[in-house]
Length: 94
Image (cartoon, rainbow, N blue to C red; front, side, top):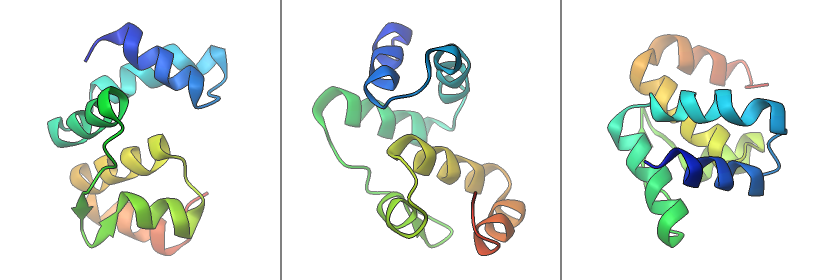
């Protein structure tokens, strides 16, 4: 994904300027499934239709008030460290 395109998207999501570069780098390192979901949303507004460990992007956004970026990063965490991520979700993501 183009870094400039991703950073412009993050600006629209009200990410503080000092966090945009670091968050952009973090997103670039996500699982390809997650990165593709970011790209599809940024490019054509396609809502992510992912279910990982019985969690969805939409569900995380609704239940925990996460942004799209936060929900997708949580799904990436579920792919990388499922047990740790599920426990954190059960404890109430903050």
